Length: 312
Image 1 (cartoon, rainbow, N blue to C red):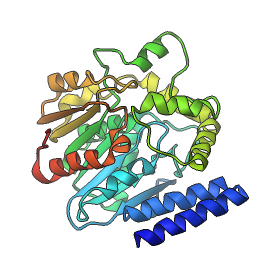
Image 2: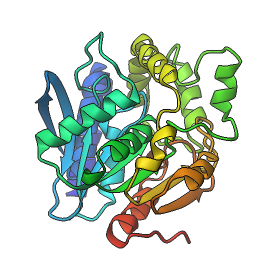
Image 3: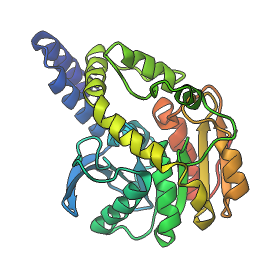
């Protein structure tokens, strides 16, 4: 099966290179990645918003995963591959991102998205589950846990937003100086700068995929800036609600994160009243579940199944 997949992908790349179909190549490559992770692509309409999501079936625990700013459901695709087969994974595109609806004139703050996400879980019939989020998605996951505690079995935060770090991050320093956010891409060449800023070891991307993602980031620049402005105006909304979180919490952080400094974990230790375990990963950037999906999945697996993690 693996050899057939490799041959299939090789033929796709050759064909796409000959005909220049970068968009189609991207779609096919992503489809193969999802297939290898046992993920099905689905959609559902919730209060007039079309949600696209992937789901890995499983008859054990359910894990809902929430992507970060500018991201989408496929930020969790390789991560999902390394989880046990019986863990069910649901990864939505939040409204405003990915393939989900992007209506103008509605709020895209973390608090608004947390409330929308709860409606999404209701539509899917999810009653109790584990929830994980990265960056903005971590802020949303934390707010979800504070607002809807009966639904959340455990909370897993990857380099989460929504809390002011005692030590300013490199991104905070840049933005406070009045310069544009490093998260916004101005041209295709600038995409490499974003990758270096976000990761210590950027994940390998074939040239056709890198070009596709770069062009997509440039095309979404104004829209993403619009959403980022709302989030910045919202402030550190999760920090004020930490004492309402009842679920045990695992926090995983990349020590070299330039976007959000790991000293946020000190705030969690001081203000979170529920059980907390923290893992600080050496030589890791802002999105550990992308940079090292196998290690991230192992930590989450241990947490979900055993209630603790092996930090060795």
